Image 1: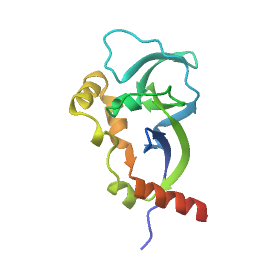
Image 2: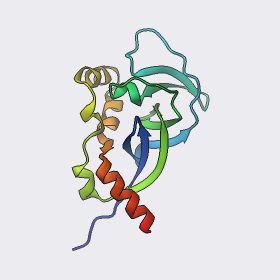
Image 3: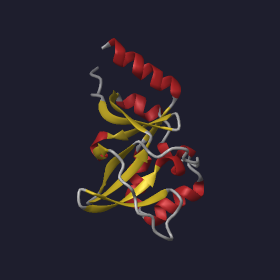
Length: 154
């Protein structure tokens, strides 16, 4: 039996947690630019930043997961949401890792630790963003250590 090919994921870290975004959803990573806050947005939206000449909403991964940010984000990860772009503010970008499809099904969804009202707010604001975030995963510490060991062995 032939094993299905592994797929690439962008691994980011935030508050000592690792997250995996499907590489097919990622446009680029970049240094964070100052977002311009605006009234009426949920607490997990930092505001709008001008990226490559385009106004892009910036979602704070720390606030999204229900924590308080103690330091400014280290990187933005821009994600393709249909024809639009959203930036996700994270502490750091670790790099690309390949995960086999069987392992992916065992990983908890990124939003599994987000509060229900946060998920509802995302759904009300942007169903496309919700779909992309639902396809992302949390990487449990044991899985992360196994990935790191595998990476070092290669």
